[in-house]
Image (cartoon, rainbow, N blue to C red; front, side):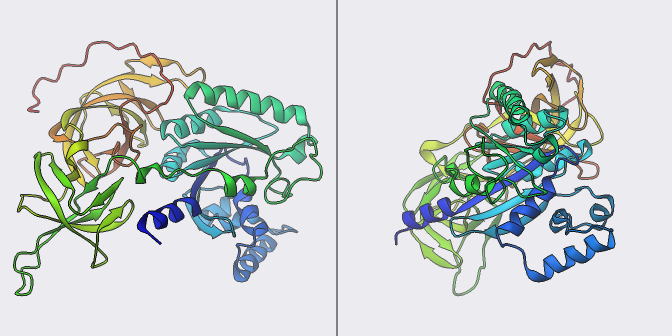
Length: 446
């Protein structure tokens, strides 16, 4: 089997997906039902859940406890942290992230969905689309998650009424379309009972689509990172300087996107110096080709000045380094992000000083309008920013590469993550922004 065949096999057998939704919409119950009914729960795990449920006075096992692992989560009956679970069926392997629903923990949804190819957004059939539903849809669009599933849960509590499902599906789909979400699949379910989760519902014969698991097993997964711009952020320079390897110099890191081959001409950014790949080592073994997300060591024909934070790219496909960054961001910290703030910007393995020069707009979730020049972003706000960095950065547009088009803004005082950023126009749909002149930056030296 060739390396291309192996890459294709890996791409088609693994799906990363995340769940999202408002508090008490049933995310953890859905995940627990998915694991239980697909026979992905170990006997001792199920016994522990049965004991915990019995101690809480519940007659039946509370499957939400399979993912709510923190003590505070079990005591309060809510999800606080992102819970990652790994399971498999004969058709596909899965990595799922069960994310919190409370608005206070929306930042964790950004974490869980940042690497997902699919997001399941739950809606309580009794409440319909609420503000948090719209926020999660906006984040899925912002992160360019290729596939979105609308799971209308608790259909048993509305008498399995097709009209309720149709109304919610139409409202959500229209909203998602305005955001530029490429695909929405709506499924009516009852996670508590198990309707349309793994097995088709006998009480909703008016629905003829797939169950949640059937959709997860068959949805196309592109894994476009293997075919887009090749990027290797240098994490560590290896120089053993031993008698056996007196001139060895390797550049180690995880390939963020694309493919590298021996003999390929590459450019090191931000310096712009070029060389040729003389060798690639994967787990200490020489190979001719390597692709994302493999961790490798590149060897170059020329002795260049390369250090952690540099970016190795194909010479014919190199982004232009710049000190000016325009991006869509989701602010995740309790402290506001304001014009004039000094921050650290972390892009792949490179961290540089930066200043927030302008906040042109903040997204209003109700009607997707842009509130111009808000002056600051508070926790869970989505908006546009313009940033000036102390050193040039080689960012791709987020629409071209989710890995090398993303960055973090960090508080230089205590290392707190402030903001998750997506370079360029992250939303697929265009939104009009009305901007005023940028704030005065007098006194800054970059």
